Image (cartoon, rainbow, N blue to C red; front, side):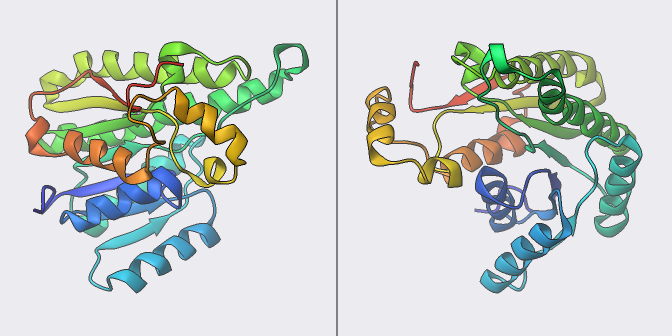
Length: 249
């Protein structure tokens, strides 16, 4: 099936982990994709990996500063110029945090909010302008299960994901009249590079909290992004979709 045939997507944080899985899943389902990363070298590496797997993939690489609205507008303009339109904006770029409150530096808190919240606003605004002109589109955000349950340290991270949920629900109400759907996916423990590097004695207790008995794979999360981007979810907006194996930690 090619659920996104003829669609064009832009994915931030697309060079590895969940973001890379989203890019590949979209490409496999017929979309043209602009893969965005923080540095040219990581973008080029991801592009080379994709092209080695399938030279026919319609994919380009961009590395805008997500804290700079002008660079984002230029990147969105490049996508439109290259592919003719922008149907799907995936705000996946983000940074985690584990700092204890007593040691938390205000500048580190601000840095997390800059990428996890401000960048979502910047990218959504730039994408929505294009989508409104063309008659509609889809904006998807990466949230987290900690946006619902919090976490015992690194307060900026759950705070930022609470904000992402608020942005998602509010923009869904604001942009519905422009035929723009806005949803978010909230992954649980997922086998990214960071999780894969954890020792087994740390992984086992995590798995014990998950009724399905395993950590998620990036592809599990990417499939949720695929559904929400497709016409199958044509009447779904303002949703925070948990993809966590029913974990409740």
